Amino acid sequence: MDERLSDALNHALSPDYVGGSSYIGEKGSLALAAVWGCVRILSTSIGILPLHLYRRSADGRKLENGHPAALLTQEPNEYWSRFDLMSWLMVNALIRGNGYARIIRDRRTFRPVSLQYLESDNVTPELVNGKLYYRIGSTGEVLESYEVLHIKGLGTDPVIGLSPIAVHRLNLSLTYKAQEYGERFFSKGGNTSSVFEHPGELKKDAYERLKADLDARMAGSNNSHKPLLLEGGLKYQRVNIPLEDAQFIQTRKYQTTEIASIYGVPPHMLGNLDKATYNNTELQGIEYVTYSLMPWLRKIELEFGRKLLFEEEKADLYFAFNVNGLMRGDAKSRSEFYKNMTLIGAMNANEVRELEEMPAYDGGEKYFVQLNMQPADAAAQNTEKDGKEDN
Image (cartoon, rainbow, N blue to C red):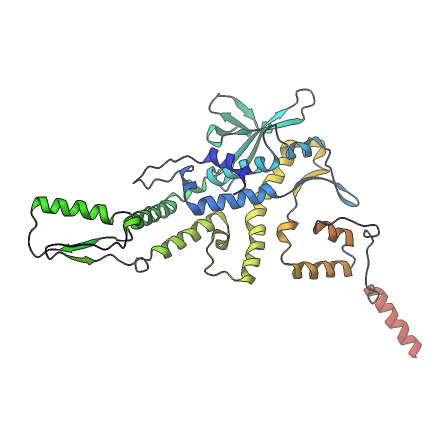
C-alpha cells in the first residue's frame, strides 16, 4: 500500500473489539481484509487522480493553475499533499460516512489559505433554522458551513452520511466470526476435535499426564501431523469435519463479495477471481470508474467548488478530476477510439498525445477529415445536379 495513505489509515484504525467478541465498530472494521481492501482501493484511486480547476470559455475550457483555490488543492497545508487530503476525506467517508476538513481563510481577502484535518468522530453537523453549522466536540466551537469541507456518504439525513460499518454491522460480524473460526481451526492443526479411545478407565494421574502430553504435542500449527505414541491400547480417531465440507472457504469468499458490494468494488480487485475473465475484468474496471468512483468524484468537485470559490467565480470556474487514465482500456481499444475520433475531426494529434502522456509537436494541433466525406446537404445537391445533367 502507498505509504502516503498510512497516516490517514492509522488515524482511522484502532481495535474496538476484543477477543471473543463479535462487535464490529468503524475503526476495528479495518482489521477485516475485505474492508481494508475496499477502503484502500477507493481512497488511493481518488488520491492519485489529477484534480484541476477549469475556466469555461467560448473555445471550450482552459486550465486555471495559478488560481489560489487550484494551488490550495495541490498543497492543502504544510504537512499534506493533494493525495493526503483526498485520502483523509475518503477514508473517513468510507468508514464513518463523513469526511471533514477545516477551511482556514485569510481575514483580509477571505480567500482559503489552508485546509486542516478534522476528526469525523469529533464533528457534529447541525441544521438550525435552515442554516448548517458544524460543532467541534473537543472545543465546543461552532463553525459555519463555509468553514468546513464535508464529503458525505450515502444516508437518509440531509446533513450527515451513514457509516457503512454501522449499517452493515451484522454482516461484518459474520465475517469476523468466520475469521475467528479460521484462526482457531488452523491454530489447532486443522482439527476441530479428536477422540482417544481406551478399553478401560484411566486413573486421574494417568489422565492428566496423557492430556498434558497431547496438548504439548498436538496444539499449534507447528505440531500438526506429528506421529503419536499411544500406550495401553489407546486408539486415536479423527472426527473433524473437512474444511471443504464445512464450506468455510465458500463462506469467506461470499463475505468478501458481500463487502465488495457494500462499497461498489469489483470482487476481482479483492482477489476473488472465481468469475473473472480477461474480457469481463476490463469491463468491470470501467464500471468501477463509472459507478463506484464517479459519484465520489462528483461530490468532491461540487463541494470544492461551493466552498473554495467566490460566488462571482462559480459561473465561470469549476473543479474536475481527470479520469482518462483509468478509462483508457487496452492499447487496441484506445488505438481504435483515437483513430475514429481523428478521422471525423473531433480530435487532433496533440490531443491524442496528451491523453497518452506524450509531448506535443508543431503542426499536431491541426484537425483532419477524410476526403471522401461531405455534408449531407451537399450530397443531396450533387445528386440533384447529376440528375439534371443526365436529362
